[in-house]
Image: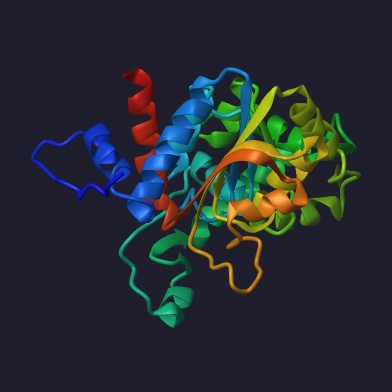
Length: 306
């Protein structure tokens, strides 16, 4: 089959663009086309449980509403994320924001009480509100719980959030479990530690594995959407080792494989560890998640509708 050169025309739809990508070969555009096809199959298959893994700063990067809509549309069954994404979701839920346009003079930013994440910015005053609000919520939760898992803690927090655009609130209302194995390594984790200094309150990080393994064993098939790498990626894949690995997976990353890092490892490598089944359907796309994932999701949803 010959490679088709990509054609662009006026008023092109997402579907038409993805179709062009799909026929263009096996480089980046071709991989995006394959990922769209695989994601549409995963979402359409009612017997496939979908785990969404987020290892980067994707709430500050603008993906918050997309994740909320995926939860509300029942397009994912579990979310495995960094503590940072949870923190930034709460930051916005408590009235804070993420900002643009402050430049890259980090000494000046420090003096002005502004933190930088690439070219996205936060304000210290928003974190002060976050600290106050999360401490109030933890105080309410601790009345009825002296020991709690991370998953159950995040569910209880989500129950108390009023922001309709919150990931935690949407997950609570739609019974989607959130797992954050590295929660302590975040601003929320810091507040948890400070709270435990004068409260009889403990987070059981091992208990989540009971719930996560139940999801794996109850699923006919498991599909994974892996955005970025790090601990959430490994937690997603390793939990499925219990059943011989995921059945399908899409990975979007900018990390490289030469150093042996998990974040940059091609998904095919997971087959050697039985974290992905030998006959699993896998697609790795190299690029910026905040650009590529919205495109893949839009293409997949469009394909399902058609």
